Length: 202
Image 1 (spheres, rainbow, N blue to C red):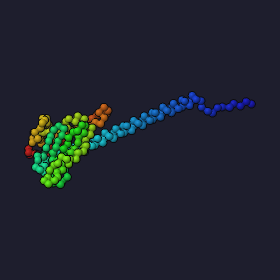
Image 2: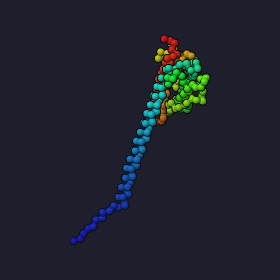
Image 3: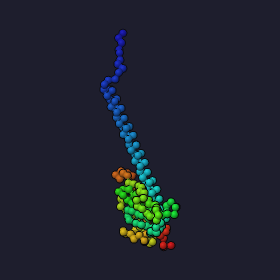
Image 4: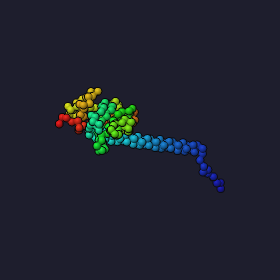
């Protein structure tokens, strides 16, 4: 009786094909994993920026609503333009009015905080603390709009340069987009506030 011995090994061609398939699968899985992490990071940073903008605008509106004469007797609004706003408000209930300055620097809206100090009391610019308030601004040339007593929710804002004594209402609008060439679309947040201590039309 003749016995037939079968080979149990793989040929070079079979091994090559198997490795090629395995490599293809690994590349697909690797690219998919990279895309998932990229999308997750993108979503997280976008949501963080939007939340930062909401909190900043909310704080700004609350601070501006209670703007009042400075601790040295200066008018509640010190400066007002399309890209910056400086005013006085007691934000920590210590009876002293802090000077708050919101201004655009590049694509960032910054917040300057200056507490009065010394004897006699002064607002020393060297003591101003500046922090980033809103980042990744789009169209940062038009953040603040101002209105007078005739504003009833409709109508055009005051033209620049504004006459500060007639300002009674302020609109704040920010547009943010960390990735302007990728979806989703630019996020816009707008809020309006009447300055209580300046009302003269009641």
